[in-house]
Image 1 (spheres, rainbow over the protein chains, first blue to last red):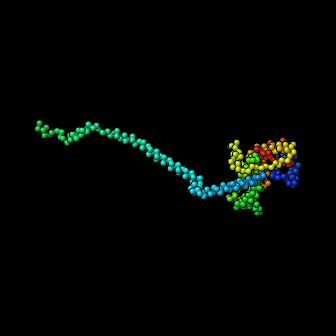
Image 2 (tube, chains in turn blue, cyan):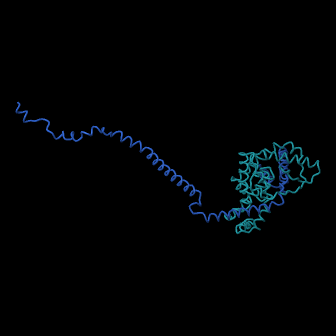
Image 3 (cartoon, one colour):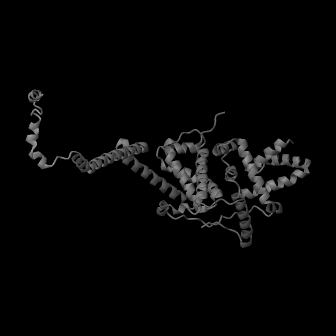
Length: 168
Length: 209
């Protein structure tokens, strides 16, 4: 028997006990190769051991619990559909909600910026006015008493040209 | 050659139309294989049942999108495989947490297990110890090998279907099973060669909590 056939029998033995004809075929192969017998015994013993592992016990109310859980899941999804029906369309998907949140944050940020800028302008206005007055200081009041005289000085001829030429 | 229609797929199509009786029939048929698979993977009866319950609820929730493209059992075991591997990874990240901690469990009915142990004390002791050794050896295997070995014991699944569930080729499945069995043979050699394992009456695994 070919090695590949032995492997095929091995693969069958992993899943189910061999049929009488398969066992006869195997015995013939093992008879030709005595060394292979021990390996096969271990293989067979492992299959038997795995096969006889007891099934996990299932609680008697398992099906009832599954049906109750399925019912709860169905009710929850019905509630979700109802709430989706009354939610505005732009809030139904997560990315829409994220976009709306981002837009609100931007609006909030710009409003704050505006408010802050106005506040700063108000805070600095008195200082600017004070600066402007300091630069344009008015002359003392005493100086203004002779204002008219000084104003007229401009119109008086400072030098009598005729007299000067006669004196020459 | 035309393939026979899958009766489970027909039941699932009825579930799709809202037939709870069809869903109950599917749960009844597959609860034992799914709980077995989960138990072999997580080795805790309560968790195995919780996971099996989640598998069936997922099936129910996905019923509206169900299309008959593969055998129902292949689809079901694929969901089971995803869930139990996720659970094993979650346990790796948060070893102290358990599914029992979920608040949803509080409203569920308590589980009722039957005591089906029928051994006389000395036989029970020997059998229990051997089972324990095999379970330990199985638990020490890499998760993919353990899963392949557990699926291999499911009569209704062919190697091709196991390959589809595990998302690999048939030869990769056979290789996983072969490597898993070789490791088991090494670890259980004294028990297997002594012939200590004698198939007989079976005992139920002990509850872990």
